Length: 444
Image 1: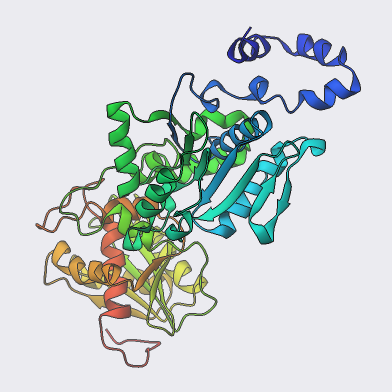
Image 2: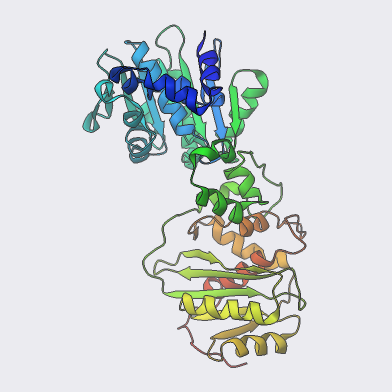
């Protein structure tokens, strides 16, 4: 009976049968039992059969990609004493923290008495049988020029540094050194992003040169906290970013859009700066009493002149009182220097509703004299110039940004890019207006 057969047989046992089986094992067998990956893995986490050279696991977050990669490396190392394995990540710090020492990394998945020796100073793991693995950063492509390997595990390849083609250079240098043994193999694990290296591998899938495994976060739901599953559904369900990060879909770029997915990924910065010289909240009020959405975006400027999107506090289908209260609460929570609100439709009403929510609100009303896309173009240029950051993931906002077309149309979700409009108003005030001292109050 092969591994797949054993796994299928074990998975088909009910709880009492499994308990009887485990109870019949000796202490030694019981300790080993938990490390029999073929019994616990889902079929899509196991290497494809046959004589393959490249295996790509492209799946949503929480799918179990890291565990699959670590277990594959462990199997290679324990069965092939001559194996020389490259471990490649976005940075050396990530290789060590995730691939080696992480909760699903190589040290964690190995039985204590057969755990490899890790020598951080040498960037090397060594198994008792002589197999070795070496740590590399994709941000240093030249470090992969020269070393030879029999196998390689490359993690989060869509996250590798794209500047100066570092990602593709690292991949190419790795492949040219993958020439030890009779059957060199490379496994790449990643959440999809529309970057050149991943698009290239998808093209190779079409020709049969790459074996592709797809999957979503839901596939591993039984091993993930229920609260986590509820939260990600709440935040990302129905968004393009959710399709990418959770369903594992490769979202293609829309030709002619002012923002691209790749551009937004380059701007991603999960940690916020400690201080900002100014905080501005942009507001795009609903056009009617029961409009689709009120865009409320919080932005900050640091002392080096870089802007950051700090929060998306937009709300759907609000009454005037509700969206005004949300604006006031957001401004208070972030100690905003300025609230900038579009007043093209019902300017006096916008002002009075906001003043009713908070009379001390540092409010500035703005009137659009140009179309949405024309207003957005100089803001998009700030991103292209590397002057903008996103302090986290803002799925619905980013979907709207990627739907603003250079030709003047909007091809994103919803009838109107309310969140994107709010962002444009905020950044126009924060980074494209006059740079004098901020005023706490403004006169209407």
